[in-house]
Image 1: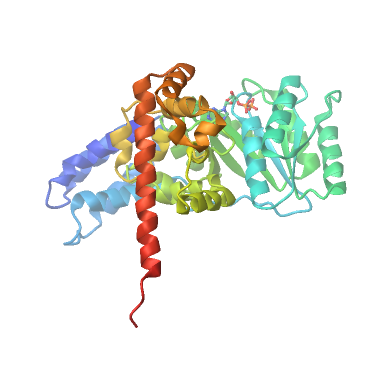
Image 2: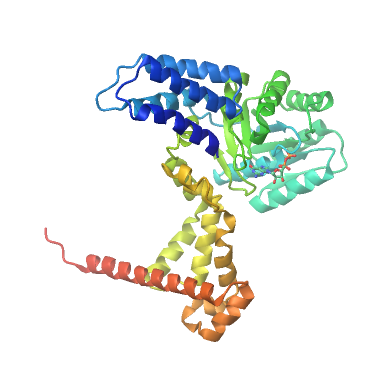
Length: 439
Ligand code: GDP
């Protein structure tokens, strides 16, 4: 996410790092580089100028503390200004109402339907009964897509494939929700490839009739400056409450994230970073600023882990580790939970200072593929009792998984080392528990 911008900002700070104090001259040159980096990242020119003027003013107004170097102080100022630029603090989504109605707007292909599924899953995890409503009356495939997502996240989907009146469908969905005790209704709507009057009329009519709790505008962050222009067009007509930025996992330059708030004066509420249903975060401007400046985002990383890991499963595996019974079935289950947290490179990039280091590395979701293929080529019996894996079984597994016998041996060795370590840890903990205390 935003690696190019991060690299350029880092370069801008370098000029200051070796210097003893902040002066008019070094501030001016650093600020100029920051402005160029922002414009290269597709940040609207006016916004880039506004924020860098503010950074300059702040930097020159500071008495440099003895304990803080000019470089660090400057990074802090930039971080604070980027945070403000993106809205200051997180703006929560309201799900109050009986039921709460969340209307989803945006162009076709921006990621509305995918986001609707993700949001439904998130709200469901918070313990509220959700209904998804398919109001795309032009593309039957969109209705099917929502049904598939609904099934995947375990949420009901309301649709009337024959009805061509979106307002009627949405109101019928509302009646259905009230009768069936649903607390939140998410309405996915039709988009077009570009802004057009008919689409705007339709979504405006839906908004007028439903009086939604929240109207969200979904936009593809990879469309750069266009994202901001589209946001403006939708906001002029719809006066939405919040923005959802999608496809931040792609090759986005970051401009949309940095300019939208200032241009439309509406908060970014969510960021979507992948096609998996878990790839959605509440947007926190401060955490995003820190990520852009290469300082990582450990808080979000921990939150993702908490969401992805199934507590019961974790307890079950913990018990098996304690009893020295950890096997390949458990290993596979752990791998699958880690994968749910998102793209591996993105995860590593959330650790402080690591974004830069993994920027050019070729790590992707396929990193686990050979390991999974090897485990899946084992019989259930072998997964539970890795001791069974003699030479001929290993050869069969290598063939079955499209790997080599060396790969299989390597995985088995790593797995055995891991089990040995677990055993040692168990002994140590068991020993400590058994030790008499002296008090
Ligand atoms: P809609 O036409 O606005 O409903 O858009 P869709 O939800 O159908 O999304 C369009 C395409 O973008 C689909 O192929 C999605 O899988 C993909 N997509 C949606 N959100 C994301 C995201 O955050 N990251 C990536 N990489 N792809 C996404």
